[in-house]
Image (cartoon, rainbow, N blue to C red; front, side, top):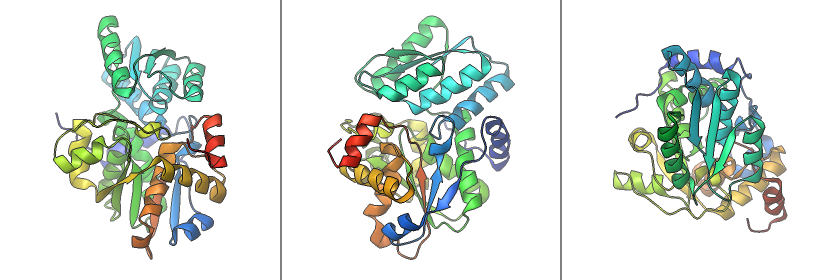
Length: 324
């Protein structure tokens, strides 16, 4: 099955769904970040959504499309490391639908608490996201519930609105860096770029400790890779999604791998320069740009601060310079 990307009309319609819940998020050209990077640096603040991450946009449009098709479920089930689960939990609460989310053992304490606060029935199962996902699929089949995937065109409709906002607000950006978890963020950047006819190069960013997407793009097929990142849980994916891979492979300029140490440095820099909190995946785009800063001189760089949901204890360790 091949996923078709949302069109401009799809994205504009999706924006109206998203804006019922919150307004467009800001993007700023931060002076200190630009100084640190050595060139103009724009930052898109998806940490300013009601769940602190971009994923909420996709949950809202996914439920809207279910409603439009008359496929209203009595229960939805999904798997997450946190932000996707908050997205689905938020949308399910808005529509009065029961929501069960499966997370791996040892998941973020504060992301788990945020999901429970949205009324989610939280289940801890498995040692990583992939095991949680497989358990969620089994549960959905047993209960006759609707399984919400981590990658789907109806999620892309909503997520694309943040890149649509960004490209319209900062048309001068030459290159953008976007973290890759399950692929919805990067695929949505591609969708918005194509819909608007924007010229920016799109660079994907993966954790150096979770390389399935980098390995899969290089191999031309899905390649499973171990996950050992301790900081970038939003990019802790062991098996790339084949549909996402088919979109990303021909459209990304290249992929950058960032280490946990580089991500920690980026989290500290973002806090010092903007006083915004970035979770590991949320800081990955800036980490990648810093890795390539010598090639970026004279360009306008766009970065996604895709989420700010990092546990307080972990963030304190990062700010202190302790290893994550």
